[in-house]
Length: 328
Image 1 (tube, rainbow, N blue to C red):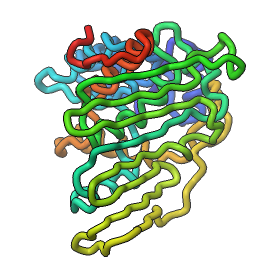
Image 2 (cartoon, rainbow, N blue to C red):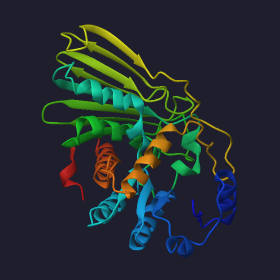
Image 3 (tube, rainbow, N blue to C red):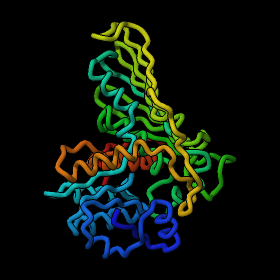
Image 4 (tube, rainbow, N blue to C red):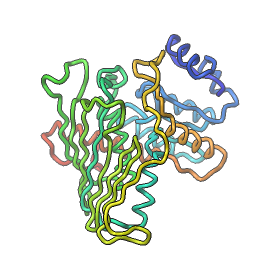
């Protein structure tokens, strides 16, 4: 690591002390021999920083959601689509063993044609009160900044929906004006199925214990959760290597706690379980050295932003359907 930059000197000093690097000026870093840049700023600044890094000839890994607004994600996708540009967006659930297992099982078609999918997501205990989830320039609160994780998983497995219907609510008695939405329920409309996503800031787990997804097919069903990694499959007819009936899977390792020590540069704790991040960074470095890309593209990040923007618009119009291709 060549160094780090942040406009807040106190934050920068604490960050450098925790990760073992040195502070530097932004222009100095962009002029350095570094091959890649990680952008993990406030959402509103992500695209402008990514654009500067790309102009300096760097590969860029932008932390999710990749910007503060739909316009930001459209701009990021434009930048990532340019010839020679290498841009990844940091949806690290993409590297979750549970998702890899689910993909490998679904490739064998054990549950038949899917008509319905359900997913749940939540922020960690008290996270909705943090400044990170209450930035004025962001198009939403926890649904946007944290709910995007599970929405990305849905896009990864199901593709982008045609339209979205949603309810996004602030619940009296659950929180005050210091935070944004409390709960949300989204319906994704496809031509041959529907999917639902519900989200709350009040599960009060450590991080992602309750986040999971279920696919219902005409030949069975598959449920998986991200952390701890787990899955349950019902195959009515069975396929090669899988007998009819229930099959359970759990990651065969000791699971580190997601939450680490108190951070010196953020009001959120450090990440203790860095497995997904390590895999994400390894893929980014491999891509810099010419390996076939496997990471999350700017198109996928834009699709997530379209869904969330459509959800907020639908909720403001009492749940009417919003067609993604008609969003401005």
